Length: 118
Length: 135
Image (cartoon, rainbow over all chains, first blue to last red; front, side, top):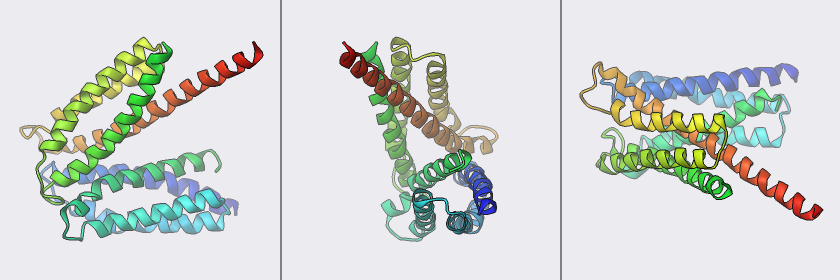
């Protein structure tokens, strides 16, 4: 159980750092004149799978209802992030950006909680 | 002083909300996503820069302490530089990606300032209530 808790803490912080990188890659692809492919790749792989791993670790580590629920919300918003960019409605596509902000806010809250020993 | 602190708290939360709306407007304006005009995003960006100046003034008037005043200065600088990072003539172009990271930093800092101001105002309220009960 302690191993799962420690792993959750490390993964939560790594996920937060990866999100910062993802914001940078998003900027590089849309404003910086570079390809958006690295942003897409990171989003479709590590950033989608990591919250699922975090959810499993939260359950295995008995991190409590709040953390488990918050991690489940994180998984939902991360999945939403890839879904909204595929629809053909402009305002729904636009939600990709503020939704990323929600993902960051939830991830930050989780990392802070994990840092305090949950 | 208390009024300035309360005003700072309220304005800081409005600022955070404005930044969230700003992210939506950015998504709406990007050709890869919403494909609409970027004008609303630019207009709100200018408004948020002005709000950050008002926040700084309120932080000084409300004597929020060195940390919060210092962070309000940083918030203003970050907001100010946002329009520079977004400049189409910026060379190298890759620097323009800092506009997105800057937006994220502004959101995090604005949220932190709003939280700290809320604690400060609530703490004063609780102290006032305790003082009132004791009197």
